[in-house]
Image 1: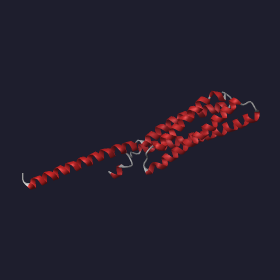
Image 2 (image 1 turned 30 degrees about the horizontal axis):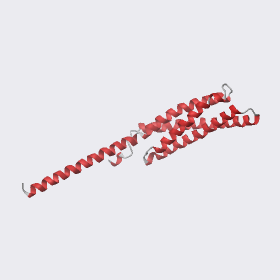
Image 3 (image 1 turned 180 degrees about the vertical axis):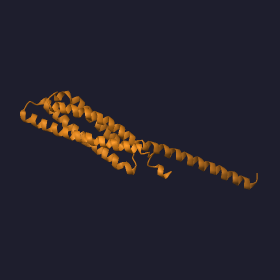
Image 4 (image 1 turned 45 degrees about the horizontal axis):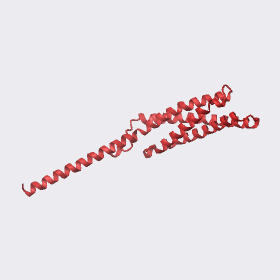
Length: 182
């Protein structure tokens, strides 16, 4: 084979190798884009699950405030909600998001922090109401329960608004933040 033919064959082989590397890198990038693009829908799904759980807690705390049930009846429910919100917060912190959606994730994370604080206040008040018979301590626990309930209602509303925003982002047709570079 002449020298020119070998050079041409080497160029073709080199071009095939470069093309294979480009296709492989493109496939990896596309997989990452799809994973990052699912963050908004994942947050929305997580928010809807927490929203229903917080709604139940709000209604049960309201029943305790109206003295329809005792505080001891909701301690397990509130404790589970504290754990679930904490787990959701850890999950949200670890999610990779695009720079333009970081503010949305941070707002969602802030609402989870507010929910955790309200739930912890409610849990402390319920434990105090169950374990105390002194009038002064009961009054302080009822006040804490009231403020925890108010804060949880506000957080529940804000979380519902965050879920709507995340649903709108998911339906906007944005397939991922890195697709603009492809």
